Length: 332
Image 1 (cartoon, rainbow, N blue to C red):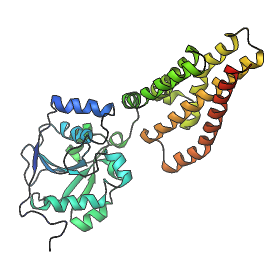
Image 2: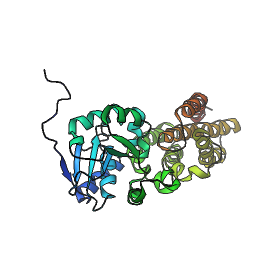
Image 3: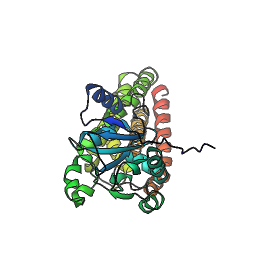
């Protein structure tokens, strides 16, 4: 009877290099802007980098193209094996949370590739961010391979391999301006068409350029300014940071609504102005909340608590704000 983990009589490897081609870089760009998300992946299995032998190190990564390429491009001229897990095209950190970069997949992939026949030193070097999904002692018990957690970033592997000891700096997960700005293109690609459509609707239904510009200002603040300004916005959670940025964004439109239509009654001006002050911050806070999934300082329980606290407030303020805008635009 053929079992689902039956393997070939001889281990097979795929060849790779540390050099990124123009095609690789183009695929990176498409991944960064979110084009065909989930399709930027490599074939799971065992790869030979250079000319590895029985004493060469073994690295483990995800089959997300950017994860695989970040690893191999930072190994330079090193001869090594790269064991690529099937994480369904998801990066190491997210896949570890979903357990696709996990203990079972590591053990299964070791058996399927017969890596134990190729190396004498039974050690796997995993990225630190994969630790949440992999039980080192279980891998050891079930496969005989020891798990060693390398640094957070592949760029530090050269220094790490000299001692196989990670410094505190290598263990630290940063969220720098560059890290945050990398997130912007995919958000722009995903949200800009929707905001343009809403801006068009606002132009015709809510009174011209001012409401349309308010929609576009909301887009710029939530998608571009928020990740850039994140560390400098006060308060500890993302939603309240978003509300603060939202109020700053809405303030010019609040003032314009109070002064633009001098022929309107004061309560009509105030009603429309308040509509901007309620609806815009709610949208910005909601989109800001989505950035919790990409940051380095949130937790599942913290995000759940924040959602339970702020999403009802976002819904109410947005709904009331849109109602005020609609009522006081068309009714005296």
